[in-house]
Length: 318
Image (cartoon, rainbow, N blue to C red; front, side, top):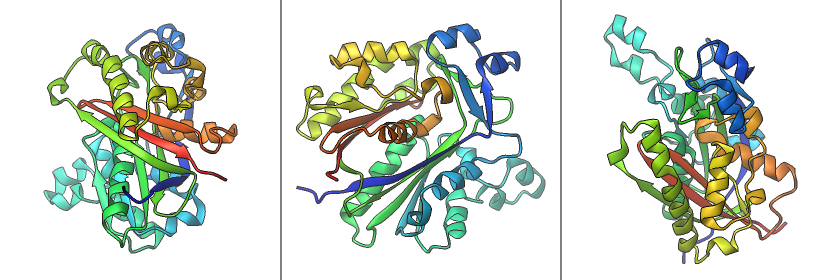
């Protein structure tokens, strides 16, 4: 049996402009009519000012952890959109012809800004599942390499200028999240994790993506629980991806799980914060005094690529 690994010290940050659905529709940022997204539970979202890089979101999310962010042995930095991992620009490269303009890595900047010597690992090509991938990689580092007792996990993304802030009928927010995975007792003990990748869905349209979403998400949750010798009946909370409310009603039915135990309270105000959703929702749930010690939760995510990931956790005893 593996030694226990824990996760805690959660933080997140959102784009600095808080906008309504009507404003997003007026500015041409949506595909669907605003009222259609409103019917799915979306009301507002957060977008970055033109001058704000995704790295600034990452820095703010990490700063929310306080001094703990500097007491780490490694950093895993995940992005959904590859350009968010680079502080340089393709425009600068087009002038200079110097590929260093494409390799000003955000993870390295974060290490320098924190003033620590921890090595950094970059993670992309997992789309909205990137944060769960970062936690999974961090867990493996803690289990297999003794020098990595505490690993800072970060995800940060903003959509580029001109992008539509709707994907697969969901309203998008720019944002970031951070947490620490380690070998010392913390808020949650990691029970298991699971990932599925179906490269055959690369380039799938919205309807094809949605068509695969329900069965694959439900199966990913079940397999993740099975890896911990658990079933859905042993589960107390689902801490979800912020997709349409009715989508989670369908999944609750498929899983035979009570819809009211799916922590979707942030959906209307923040929308789908790319790969930060689970941490945003987990922080909100913790602020409500849930889950209680001993309760079990899963954090499922789906992303283009196509990837599905799930993390099973147990709340540590106080």
